[in-house]
View (cartoon, rainbow, N blue to C red):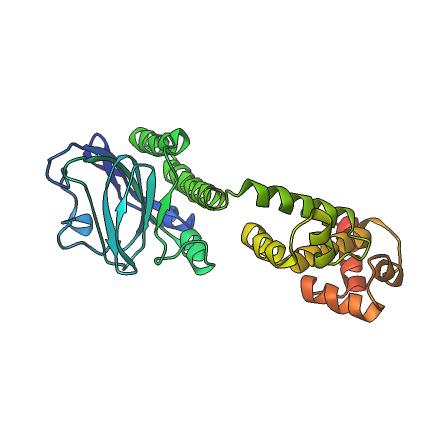
Amino acid sequence: MVVVQSKNIKYFNINALDESWGIVVTTVGRQLIPPHSSYPLSRHPASHSFNPDNGRVLKEYQLIYLPEGTGYFESESCKRRKITAGTMILLFPNEWHTYEPDKDCGWVEYWVGFRGLHIDNRVKNGFFSPANPVFHLGFSVAILGLYEDILNHATEEKAGYQQLISSIVLYILGLVQFMHRNEAFNDSFAILKINEARAIMKRSIDGIISPRHIADQIGVGYSWFRKMFKKCVDVSPAQYQANLKFLRSRELLETTDLSITEIAYKLNFESVGKFSTFFHKKEGLAPLQYRKEIRKTKRNP
């Protein structure tokens, strides 16, 4: 059931079925804060009551998007900082925080509150951190549309709406990751060179070519290449090559009758033993055992 505070601000009563989905939406809203007005404008339940002078601690996550205006944000893990239009703020449960619009400017704010294992796991795995809660994404019609979709579905309150709107929240989180990482890495020359390197690696899976040799081929220094490749791709050039080789070895085990020895030497391993150790470390199974399991699955789907 939706508990409506105003037309554009909603809080939700959550049931056990909703919780079992793995993520639930607790609140969603939007409001315009005109210049020289008090903040916040609306009253909220005690669990979400807010005074910028004292800040607050929530028991949930919130994504706050500011398509217009400027202001300030501060949290237990993030020093006070200026925020501008196009900023997304991720609030964390049990983390003190405060924020407010600039008195002379005001702002437009959208927010959605949520909790559940799906977001807990993303934080645990390092995708989001209280130390880095602010993302400058710029003005995004797509993000505004997603917030509006959540508000609209909540208002209609059709069966299953909680599962739908909580899944939209996960999509927004994915957009935040995508837009932030690509905005942070905007060196077009580096992207061009790294894409050249990846193309060479993909063409050379069955051969032997070192990251240093690849750097020579694309005309850049080795130290620069290693640093920029890791920054863009999140793994080192050698790790990326190893992952390609692993995927190729799985393909050969699944789709050919080549022996383990033939596959090992085709992929330029020094010995069958080194190939088996490499594959077992990646897959958790020896190559021959992996092939048997795959073929057994195909016979008995």
